Length: 97
Image (cartoon, rainbow, N blue to C red):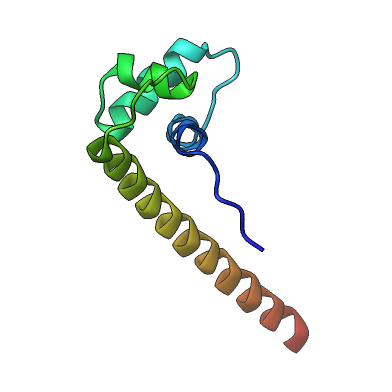
């Protein structure tokens, strides 16, 4: 069974992901500014997404954030695939020793 998450929660999750990695002592404002730069949206709009204060989510905004998130997910998969290959290669070397 699948559950749909509300669009405002989805957008909030994406902008918070775009702010990563969070640095020690970094303010929320700095994270929001970084997420806005990464996503190519205004800091004010990003802040409203962050706090789920957006009254209406434009399809264009949702598409922009979802497209960025899809690319981010693909980059994460590629990174993890490479790490897995490296671990398998290391394990192969150990088993032949």
